[in-house]
Length: 252
Image (cartoon, rainbow, N blue to C red; front, top):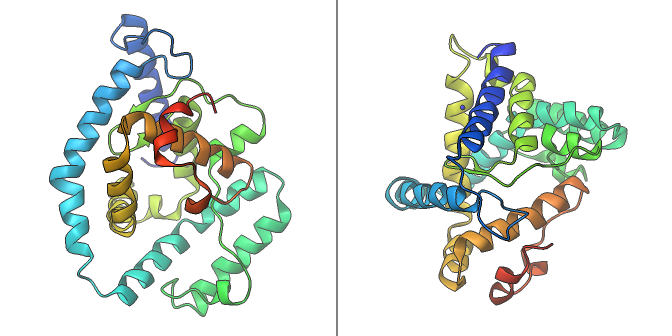
């Protein structure tokens, strides 16, 4: 974050490296934590992420908020349209033909009528957007997520989703833009992260302020949101539990 098979090898190498660390004792298992066996390691990586957020991502995101809102909305529409081929591939893998049809129609309409995806006429036509990834596809076939892992700049990345991320890279047209297959996806991933951080600035800051244990809160929210995504649900912020209760939800 490789042309064709190199993209898949990247995720596999990361997963293999983590497994090697586990075998060598580098990932120290936390006691009484079956759902997060490498909690000590994960908390250290989470701290790295928090430092990067405080000194890099958040200041950039704050600056991005000075961009007029209509421009930011069009940019978000464009990013959403770029990821549509990945969603379409996974809709098909899951046998979700109606959702695949919706994704294909959205891609065509927003690319042509929406000027390359800058606008979202498909939603106004009743074609609601959704996202699918290969981690979700594996889950629908009964593949377990594996141990919870936190990787800076990727976030929660259990082995199933990390492997899925590598497969999705193969179906992402941005991968094949330019001379280096890394350039396009990394740029898109970075811009997407800045936009998402800016959009959710208030929510993230409030959760951090209100959480007794921010790491545990993020872990709980991730698990709930991921389960909802796998079941084709829609996460509604208003439906999430009270912040004070989140630290007790790791058995979800």
